[in-house]
Length: 351
Image 1 (cartoon, helix red, strand yellow):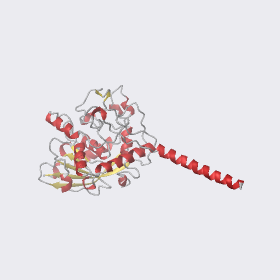
Image 2 (tube, helix red, strand yellow):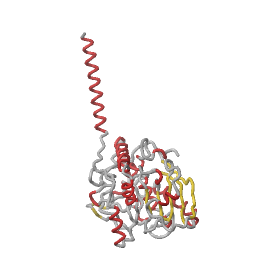
Image 3 (tube, one colour):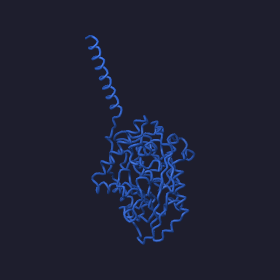
Image 4 (cartoon, one colour):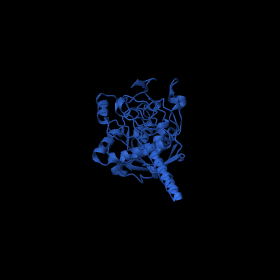
């Protein structure tokens, strides 16, 4: 009888220990989503810039497009919540901070290291759709130059370009993405401008968007350089749209191909560096400082807002192409999370 009682006690102790371990594990995996948001003031902000004639600002309509998509698709917000939850859970499981604190911005003093995700260099196959009255006006040389720029920007660590006296050099990183041209499709189309309501995608649908990045090159109109779709959106409109004047190596302050880098950053789930919400909104990345608004031109360092120097040289700001040259470790971790198992773009890995 004594042996039976001892055995029962041992079993009870075992269950208690397992329950404690389960509670500990659950506690460790708790993900704070209290700062998550999708709608922004982008519509108002972009309209104000246009009305004030601030043409020196890069005009990305990704967040404006997102607001429209959210209104048209009531289920999109939940899908984006799920993508964000997976992203934070993946990064937390690796033990490396990657998201900003609830309701606040990032802090460049926080040590964020690149996560070890065993994904290696992630190759992204790219289909390019050129839609112009004369589709040959966008040359093969432009296509090649744009692919070269994407490969350089997502692999290079341009610490030699960073201002002296800043800690930002500690944050610049190799994101470990490569891009391979899978095909170029040229469509002669007389339409003079396409806008940002995905009309060009409806006319020329994406090809296997679950495994390929689709890029449309067309005249968007309205001084808009480009726009992208975040992970979790409709596959029928998934991809990036770029104005032909800003595609690859062209001319002018936005002629170095960085519009594509910026928009692919959105496609990889990065927000604008200032969070599209002044000092009280975050981009969900710990090692990017909070900023009051976008920066344009080529600011002299330091450009200060929200009591800290803005990371104006980040690809996710609006500065001129020659003056943006880095992603951070936190941004790297965030982008790569969506390619991990269960991530919104995991089906692209290995293609």
